[in-house]
Image (cartoon, rainbow, N blue to C red; front, side):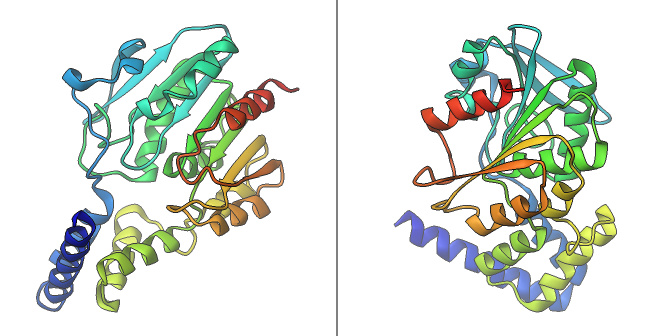
Length: 281
């Protein structure tokens, strides 16, 4: 019943935006971007903070008008930064953290814009990368692990900021092309060509981004550090072909294909392989 309700709701929203696009294109553009960029899940409150996050040293960092939340589990001198994905928060690493603790890493995780305890209503990769850069320059992590949109942001970050601190990167189930995300979003809401063009124009005007060029595979092509790229053949959220695109471009990365882990990619064997990759010279 809930799936039927969700289907009707998304199509109704799409129909409304389509109608508005002929009356007020600017309003339609803002509405289309709002539903594309505002997460509906992943928020936390202090009262409902998961146990794994309660165990960490928490700090709120101010950046311009934004506040974002970080968590640190102290260990040895080697540091690793964890970057979660869409409609999630730092607690998504709960099952992975024990493996990293066993290797005596100091672990740092953050809540993305508009996720967890971080401020904001809108999520976008360039802003997420700004948050990451602040953390990277403060704590100087040796490694970075990103999941889903967090993985795509990790690729964007390293290609644009070229951090000398990050020695290795692990990317799990990441989408490649912004155009693919926009196409999927358009299909979900049944948006017409007019709205689709308005939405693409928004990225050009607001972020100076050409959706055609905003691609994980293009970002990966400029990354020189060692990488481990992992994608599951049964990923129900990000199609396996997205991982293949990134793999073809990232020359210094190993492409690990899994089966049956789907998009969450929580798996003992995989976590052990990641740890082996990180500590192998």
